Length: 330
Image (cartoon, rainbow, N blue to C red; front, side):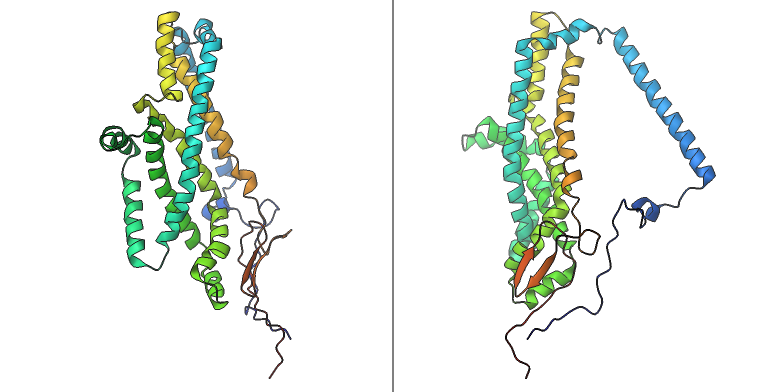
């Protein structure tokens, strides 16, 4: 015999965006502009575009007068040695960011998990560490590893920068993970406990997968922050992009008697934009997962017999079913 414990009401259907139904976020926050408002917005947009174009034109004109747009200054970067230096520095930056990210995300999730425990001393100590690392500037930690740590231990320049990045960004990741878990429906935790699941099992099978899906765009933003944080290697004279740019400027003055300060940092900025833009647009496709109750729902999360079945990364806000089989009615 089978008994089903169902909620009194079904969950409200989730409206899918981009299908012509349901209010958008902008409509919920602002009133819809009328005909006059739309005309004013269009006129203001035209003037804003013209102003930006005029500002860009003025900047380019001043650069041209200073000779910064001349071809010889830019042709210098087509040399094989300069290209190889930039590529090598870009690889160093990406490897440093990759190692820092691999250490940051697991450590941040672990810290966020510990801060959600019922053990008050552990929660207090972890919270103190997280708050301290979020408050201390990353540059100060770099100086600490540069000036203080070598007196007690030998640390390579790579880890003198990687460890401060991990310490700062893991603290922020911990808070992001904790916020993601707390954003979930409290009923899911209570349903798991009703099935006899422990707190750790509930976190590992029910809450953490959903929290990770919710925080995925923020994690990619954290990765962008890690990549930008590698520029602090300039303090350590570590051969990443920023430091390599300064050496290229000095080399151009000696070898070709050229001032390529502007050109060098424009190219380095373009490299950072390409890398961070590609990472920043990755969640746009990976986060489009249907949730239960919406059209085309193919992934559901149910608690059946004390086991969590997670169908993909779909957000589980639906019903909890408790089944008892093999029992006869008394």
